[in-house]
Length: 139
Image (cartoon, rainbow, N blue to C red; front, side, top):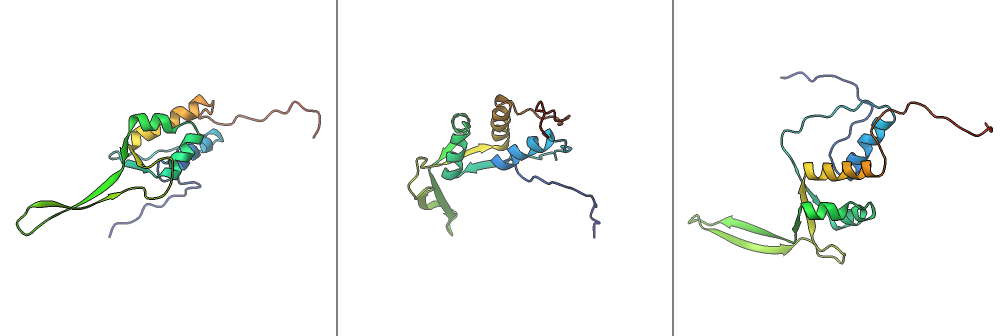
């Protein structure tokens, strides 16, 4: 049996979704060491309609939408006993009322680039906090 490598971690961010992409540079800004694990292969990201609404409020959805793909339906396929491929059913991805009647799909690299660009455009720079200076005379 392989032995586990023991280490201590204060914060572990798993994933490159909106929360992970915003949490990592924010922690780095306050001095937390940022060590990224290598990604073996890009992973797909499918954003649900509610997530797209949140991305819209952050002015990130339009750029993501231009670089990715819209997924409006899913097909299920099977192979019969004669090895013929046939489609069993087709279903809509989004069945409730929303402005975005599709799942948005892109790869991890596109999503990370858009989120990183959004942070930089808002002057959130990744770097350590060097100190705090108060210009008021009050304690």
